[in-house]
Image 1 (spheres, one colour):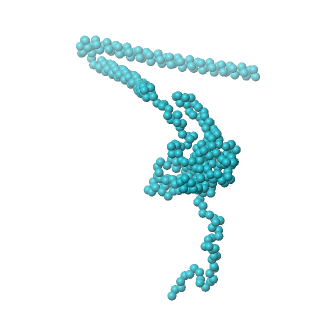
Image 2 (cartoon, rainbow, N blue to C red; image 1 turned 60 degrees about the horizontal axis):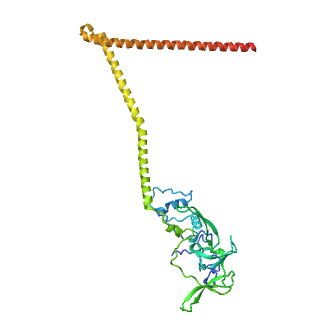
Length: 378
């Protein structure tokens, strides 16, 4: 019988494992399970479907330039199925959308419109004001007469450009509540108190210093939700800026003028392109016709001369002899003129060459004289 393979012989002492007190590892609290990037501020639970065609430009802009897709043009399967965001992409998302982090939301929320708060850090420390608006998803509030900045309202047809001062949001971590009874900074906690009238438990805010209760104002559903600094003012939204009767005629005229200008320019460009071609074609055709006539006349004259020289003119009728003689005289005169012109041109060329040769000889003599004089002076 074959011996069984054992990883450890049963004859050796088995080391005892350390006992766990209450079945808990003593170092479990020293290494808490924290999601990657959460402590660095780069964690985000925002999941981006990289297969979405609408997000392709965003994705390509976020990708690192050293990344390469070697098979992006000839792959059968979608290569973005199991792809996760890179580290630098998560950092960009976390920096741009800080309020996506799961621990960004403050609970319980104790800041409501109408509360008096005091700035305890940053610019404007020591100033007090009333909360005007709350931007909860950003953990920001708008406080009256605090963080006031200039806002430029663009000009319109009815009014010029305006520069107004408005309060801008500040973080809730920069302010502390003011106790209405002691008029001092206090700490606020949420407590549940029984309502004497209805008998139900209600949440209220309590000052830990004086114990005074501050109620939570009810949510006003009639108020429009939005950022008060980015919303359009109601007076601008209600202003009627379009006058159909006055603007329709102007719009029609502008469109007609634009169409007329377009067609005129197109015709002008067409004329500028085709007119030189038409003129060039006409000149070429005229020159071609002239060349054909000259060539035909030359061929006809040569044939007439050959006919006169080869045949006996005495056998022809007298009328034909007179007609041929006149043409023959003209052709001979033209040939004599051409020969005389050629002779004159040849003589002029010879004379010009002689003059050029004489000028060259004179220049050489002048150079020799100049060199002899310079030698004598030396």
